[in-house]
Image 1: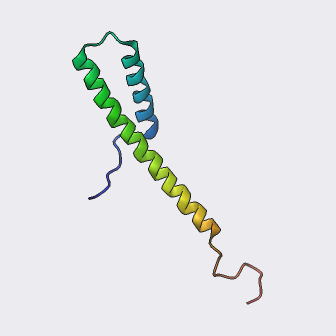
Image 2: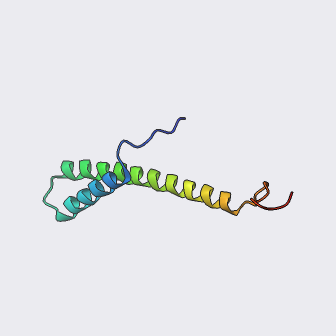
Image 3: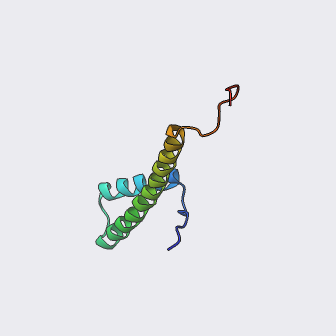
Length: 79
């Protein structure tokens, strides 16, 4: 299975998700409209989670690189 890049940026998905939640909380929708919005919200939440997981992985990789002792001598250090 290949990982695809989400079609929306994290910020776009988050902002649209906020709008979906606002509309659902406001009420006044038909059952079908509510279900459609709920499904869109679930998809947007998944997109946000994908972005956050990717960010966590990148952070973990950067921190592990930083924590690993270097095998090369430091500049100016004797061999």
